[in-house]
Image 1 (cartoon, rainbow, N blue to C red):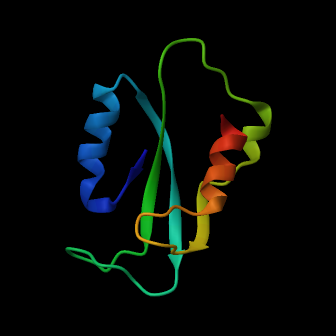
Image 2 (cartoon, rainbow, N blue to C red):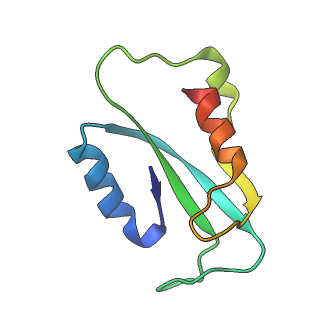
Length: 91
């Protein structure tokens, strides 16, 4: 689940409400100009990682995956291709 910094509490609440247990997150640092922000001009978003149900396991190769992505901004709300590749490698 994606969340901007100012909506992080809402995203965590929604994740739990949907039956997911929050485990960790990945940070997307956005190359280029800073975005908007309430207290700081934001250049990152959080990709929240959660699991649902019992019996999930950690793939050995996932232990080599980084917790950050550095990629340029795309169109409004478009996420970087690197994020999709990271999610697929972990899932």
